[in-house]
Length: 194
Image 1 (cartoon, rainbow, N blue to C red):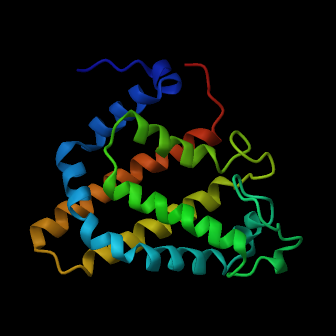
Image 2 (image 1 turned 90 degrees about the horizontal axis):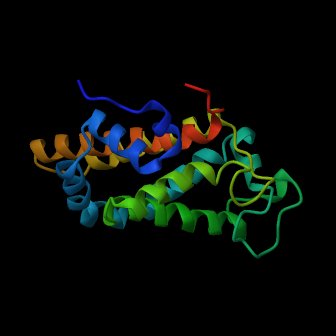
Image 3 (image 1 turned 90 degrees about the vertical axis):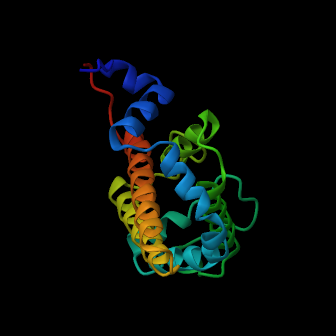
């Protein structure tokens, strides 16, 4: 039985990621499957991004988070929810960020820098990073990640991959998104003494 330092899981990001990756079986084979999918998925990123933002626009509970100034955005900030149209400059800015995120998933090495990036994805949606006004509730983050997971699954299943490759790719992305889910959720918890 392998000993896991549970306190360290809360304070050491690399240790946490290593433990979770080992636990769910996310290793070199899964990373290779994700990277191998890059040439097929990269051209589809704009459609995936548009699908995500079309979905977010359907609900005031998700769309309202685009009213406050987004970190790094320098343009005109909408005054009301009604001012945040799908073609608003700030939405275009956010779409670019999501596009870079999806591209990073399929192209970047899964090293300490990437783990830090995945962790920042969770943190940046809270007042703990960037804008103090941006505080996306966990339920909305879970809804978003669930939608992204399903969209990626549908995309992979429509690539026409050989069955074994398709299964390997789907499983690799599934594991990756569970790791991402943890790195989002951790920023919504109060660290309890263990």
